[in-house]
Length: 389
Image 1 (cartoon, rainbow, N blue to C red):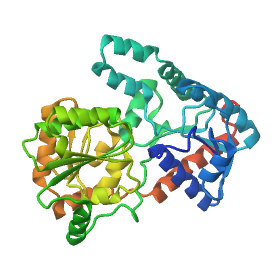
Image 2: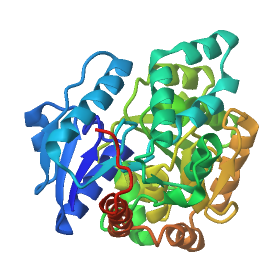
Image 3: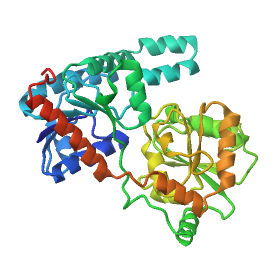
Image 4: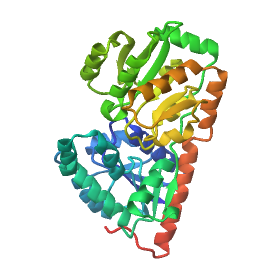
């Protein structure tokens, strides 16, 4: 097949960019011809796409809303020159046979966020140009006659799309992200002690790890409040990710836990942090299916997260983690942290964590995605309506 893959940005280091890289490499390795259409400059795009794939630059301009609109319009024009047999979009665009909803359902995210906003904030959210553009594109995308299939990366996102947009269930397939098992794996007890010692973790310390960029959406402020509610000075919070830390440092000082919180910045290598941590905590307000949860579990690390995270389906409360409904409810979040820390990270907890994601691999994600693309291509060949170009 000649496959066109759409994504506005190739940089950023987030889950969508990681997924795109694995998919493109997998498609090429399977013998398919792949062209990536993104909004990066030609020299940047050619450097970032996987070897064996080609790159087509799509002009984008303006602020956030402008970039979304200009990419959607110009990608449709660029597709006319590409001549792809099947189009896979990882972006809300105007032309795709298959849409991978890795960014979740924007309508659902706005609905989940609204109760935490003031009346002025709710009005601002509804009027914000970016939100209006994304909602318009999302609605148009799911109603498009040329859309053959939708891939959701969790059952949560699948249900959100079905509920908000009324697609037939058989049209929305769940394909989870993979896990790089060569990189994310548990250590022996001796190896883990050595890693903790190398990182400066004291023997009696209980290390709670937070990994993620976009601290506000990921719930870091709620986690710091919950840490302050724990009656355990040995509980330490390590924060790895990209974002401004001043607000959170000030919060930690105000709550008297500044000495218990350490900011690592955008750590390039988080594997050793997963392996050393007693617990990963991600009290996110909305996450379609957090890669960091899957990676932590693969390293044998238990997880506390929320019902608004699609990756919660891999957790069994009381066994390999805890799930809370509302991260802003400090006592409930603190209680979940306390239960998980008291349980510890013994061999049984580690085994339950790794077993939960044992079936996940990027090879399987690529294989199942290719099967969906083949079905979409077969529909085009048989004369079913394709996307409007």
